[in-house]
Length: 191
Image (cartoon, rainbow, N blue to C red; front, side):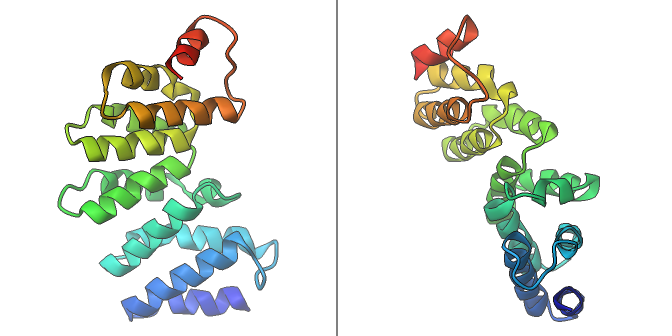
């Protein structure tokens, strides 16, 4: 089957083949043509394990998949404790900025309370470009936990103000919040 062939390619000793197999299976798992409905969760579970690969090309392919498709049905559920821990570890890497930025983007796409907490904790980053990436990812999380920190960013951080406003608008546009009273009125005033 497609899944068996992809599994063999993912286990290849050639990292270039593993990276390409990851990309191919990722596309197939998100928009299945060859995979059956029953095989999709198995494919996603197999993809989730690829974060433990030792080759940078495979890790980059894994992070690209998660940063592009982390919000797709089934993907967040496939990220168990070990892949989640690996993502958080990569998000803290200073020596590999590309992997770090992809990990932050993936953390934003995969909606989990612990990922939202992590992003909220990183809002104080001194690098403004990196801080904007974190705010953007927090907006992708669309977590109500982010409301107060984002309002603070709008009012206190002129560099990230536009990104924070966009993140707040995502919260409201999705219907997770409404401009009804109290705290929400402060958010409305900031937008």
